[in-house]
Image 1 (cartoon, rainbow, N blue to C red):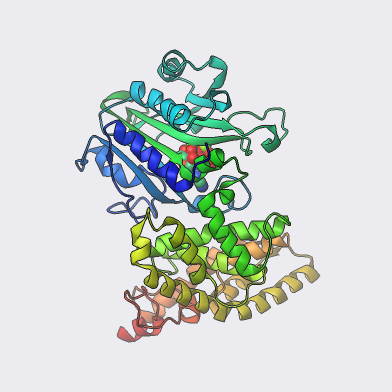
Image 2: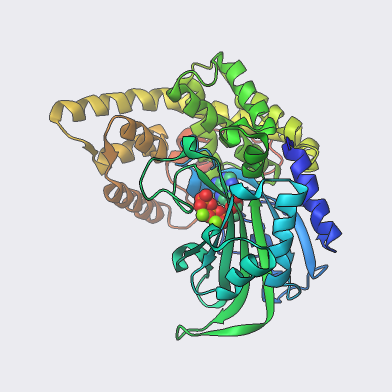
Amino acid sequence: KNLGVNEIRELFLQFFESKDHLRLKSFSVVPRNDKSLLLINSGMAPMKAYFTGQETPPSKRVTTCQKCIRTGDIDNVGKTARHGTFFEMLGDFSFGDYFKNEIIPWSWEFVTKWLEIPEDKLYVTIYEEDDETGEIWHEKVGLPWDRIKKLGKEDNFWQHGTGPCGPCTEIYYDRGPEYGCNSPTCGVGCDCDRYMEFWNLVLTQFDAHEDGTYTELDHKNVDTGMGLERMATIMQGVDSIFDVDTVKYIRDAVCQKAGVEYGKEHKIDVSVRIITDHIRSVTIMTADGVLPSNEGRGYVLRRLLRRAARHGKLLGIQGEFLAELSKAVITCSGEAYPELVDKQDYIFKILSIEENSFYKTIDKGMEILKEDMEEMKAAGETVMSGEKSFRLYDTYGFPVDLTKEILEEAGMRVDEEAFAKEMQAQKDRARKARGGEGYMGAAVTVYDELPTDLETKFAGYDVDTVADAK
Ligand code: ATP
Ligand code: MG
Ligand code: MG
Ligand code: MG
């Protein structure tokens, strides 16, 4: 069945509505009352308070399509077929209501009956000690044992410290040997792109105690997560999440802007995919009120935006281009996420300001970095000193991640410890000199010359004002 991203999303939500779930709209990517998390990275994350019982859910059965940001996957983007820093996670949630006996057959029903995926392409994994789940897959669903693979705790047991935790069971699709890595041990769970994990069913069954023991929870929960772009990759029979209809629409816009053709040269494709992914993340985050800054989630936004900008330059795009590309994101996802349409002018403004402020400083920084690298080469060094990398950051406003990335491309690296030391020393000096908190690093003065007519003030964008106020 060839289904579009927007159709799959709707089918999933309808399926769970038919099982008495309440459909909620996606939560913001900015967590609410949760200091443990910078950005929402799963469908379950914004519902933690429902699972712990701190808040009462509007229904014991909920289904959502959640906007997710996973910065941890940034280095996979463009390299694997299946990772983005932004993606949409479809999920269904049981707050002390249904459990294994329901969700396992339901998930199979959705995948094989509603999506009509051939059963002989599917595999599942279970936690090695969770015989119950194995039995359900085998007895109730009728899956042969050779399609049920047992994995250990690190893969199939969900736990964060003490408290509610439990086994997972995941569903995989075999895309065929042409996507395999040719390793003799390649199989379900291999990191290559052949067996693609697309649905994680988390069965929160236990309470983990300080002493390492577990007891059964009175109210067991279910939370599942299915990657929408991954499912679309399967349904559309394409190579990667960058080839599915909505994402391809953005990818085409990137190629058109850069005047390049996709699928001709690996290096170009990687840059195209990075821009395509990052513009999605950046657009979504900005719509949810994140502003570029040098800290926390603002820094995530800044880093993604600048990385996209830099890859644009690598492709030869002249001048500003990100706000224009964000239009493609809004076109594709505006219906599912109306806040994108509501805030589009605001999004364009923020992206445009940040992109231009980056270009102002990058040129000078680039020159210095090139000189530094030549010096290093001449001296036969591959590790850049903390002094050099910090000077780039501090005096020229050059983000250290960018320095790292450029060095890595040349087989060099930053001495991160030394960089961190310089940074700390700078902070200490600044605190002493100004006699107070609220100082955010000298780099802010260099590359945050932002106009003041924004709706929300950038935290600490104008260091001199902060200092003067003291
Ligand atoms: P992988 O092992 O492929 O990195 P994961 O085990 O980290 O995936 P989960 O945390 O189980 O992923 O998330 C549930 C589902 O969300 C996955 O099965 C997948 O379909 C989707 N997903 C996870 N990370 C990404 C990503 N970076 N981009 C797109 N989809 C993702
Ligand atoms: Mg992962
Ligand atoms: Mg996994
Ligand atoms: Mg997983």
